[in-house]
Image (tube, rainbow, N blue to C red):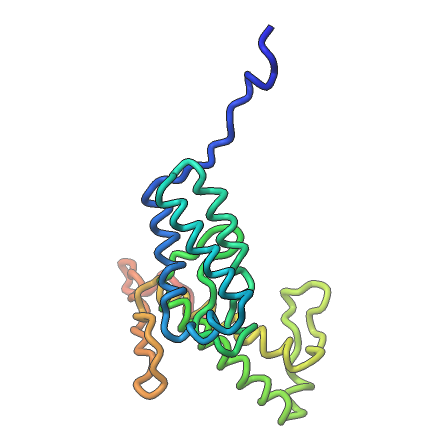
Length: 209
């Protein structure tokens, strides 16, 4: 009888050139981004991590059969490199656990910056206005804490920043925003598409007003 081990198929650790290159391009763009260089050269540990990342990229370029393992190692090395963790970073590490974002590195960086600015502004807003601390409450969508006040400025501001990031991500994916960040010129959000009308000429959506 054949041994059980001989019946087992080896785990497929390969990755197509298209998938590998799409992931590696985002990482290389992060590593070469001018605004990240101060951070990437700030300590020997970080420099060693960068060297390991580049080495694994080279290995994956040469051999497609081990790319899944190599990519996993690459992701782990930079998983903590986020703008909210390091003041000297201009863009966050572009990949993490789970599905990789399809947004360009530059757009992700701008979303990180927007979210951080919104968070900082709302922390200051909370700290300087006791009335906001009293009337700002957790949404009723949270069945356990809905209606409760936020415990501190960070919790209040984090929710505001998350909402803005979500909204602006949708603006980009809907092609209503080009992903650029210019506080003087503005964001240039285009109007939403016109709803299709029925024969009566009224919109399919009901009027909530």
